Length: 277
Image 1: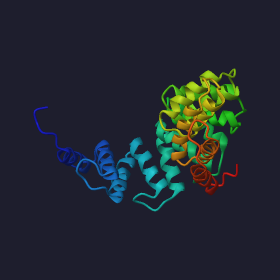
Image 2 (image 1 turned 90 degrees about the vertical axis):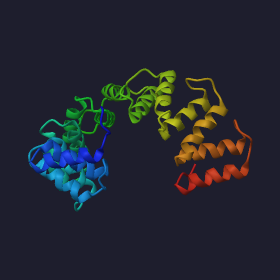
Image 3 (image 1 turned 30 degrees about the vertical axis):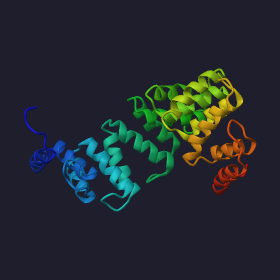
Image 4 (image 1 turned 90 degrees about the horizontal axis):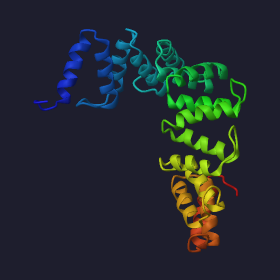
């Protein structure tokens, strides 16, 4: 607005405010160092230093980011235990990202004893704040009966909330539920719709399953040519089952010119990943 934008100037103002103890400025300065943005060179040590100053003032975003630094060993010695401590402080303040991270740690036993019940509790807190990944993970817990009574119906509810936010994993999971009739009436057309949404975002398993729908004519008109296209997109991402399917199509000449050499190439890639089909 009338002056040339200068990231360096922004950083300078962050620094002045941070030096005076402003927690938000300290956090912002930490983010700049963490990502190497706004004209500062990436520096994990300085990111941690500024996150810690803000975190010590109970600035929740900084506590969460400091936890992530410990979780990943960026700028500090890696420690799941210390990560959990900082996640918990931010989660107790209601920060959805930290609540999700804490749930993730309980689910996997990172820095705490594995506890599905507590994982569900923290996932639910984040999910109720519309954290899409937490909603998807909560759906996974209901689908598998981890920390809650198993219920495909409730799983579908959470998958749908996350899928409606555009989360590819949730869209894939919802498609899987429609395909198999888990928690909903089986519906191949809706399965295809949700698989496609995830596939269009580059979700390899969804691309492969969409290819399978075209191969079998489930929810769409059968088309080997379109099946090949989706199998190839998944295979190019390294998905073994898609590589195997693509190799099989080359072997038989389904929807593509037959080529034993190309078939062997794709089957070998799948076999190298342990796909024994």
